[in-house]
Length: 145
Length: 330
Image (cartoon, rainbow over all chains, first blue to last red; front, top):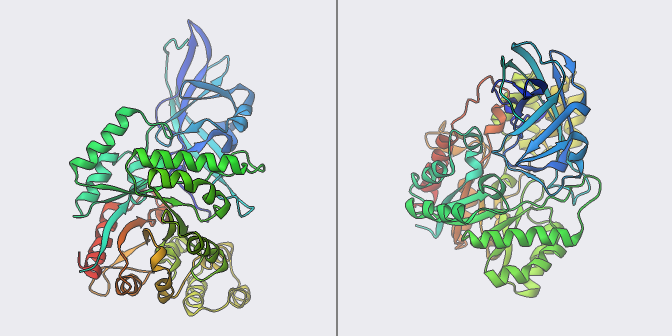
């Protein structure tokens, strides 16, 4: 069995929130945490993907936000100066035209993350972390932009 | 009574801290509750807005230490060589990372820095001038799978002897003295479907010093499942050095990590299940070593497969200190 770190708290239990511009649906949001005892540079996130009710979400529609900065998932690999402090939550925004129906949904997150401190020996670890949790899609919504 | 002092690496409370069941203040109070004063931190986990904490955070840090009569003893630094993946950081960047840590450790009042065992001497040499300037000792961690009495370690020791530096030494981690396999890890593999006979056989081979290849060849004839094979490989990632070996390194030891996986009182007194602490610490005491042993509890990760995180780090650390007090008499 692989070392599991803190995978089970990858997904924050807070409800998924509609993300609106006025009355227009832009998407929805939820939060994730980094599954280790120490933080990481964002460049160490090698893969990040999500499934909602078993269906993979298109990575091009996903934004990752931390400390007031927002990233495309494809930008994370270059963010080697941006540090994810272990107590901070990252906000994931899924852009879409139609919100998931209000109520419970099965959300899965998969993150492959490099442990960057080994390395002088030539090899280094990249850990797969995954968690599925039932999150509630909140009804109605607030204007976020 | 010895000159060995007790402390705690807050790494020990990582789980409660991470789950926000314990704040930094709770962690420092837990150290103080053990009637000891040595605090060691995992810099990145404990320092808000690392590596640039606010002045307010730093003031609060010193206020907490004062409130609980604790001292900042060791700052655990990392060396993130692979922030760009395949492309290793340059030596200049490595020096920059370590100098950043030296400056921060100094601002927070620490006396020494744990340097990861993978950091080459050439990087440490370039950081020594700053360490001297702010009077911080750098200590290369002697951590499994590295060992005492090896060419790897001798390179660092030769450098200390040659230069006479007072700002570089070694930090042995007691995880290099794992005499018996970590029992809570064995139990975790059993929960995951490992075969008890194979687990027992591998543990016995490790304890008896049977060569890895010989053990593995036999395991492969025992119809092992994947979990068995995983353990057969993992069991030999642990390290056992003869405690007597530490004697020759006493002049170079600036700090110690008291690694701990599981405390047990099965023999009537508290002891760590895998590590012969009494034997090791006696050698240090007989050699007149002075410094802090900071408990580093690492058992919590072996319960992560259970439905609830069923572990009390504070209690485990407390029993480790029951053991330390018995041995060092303080």
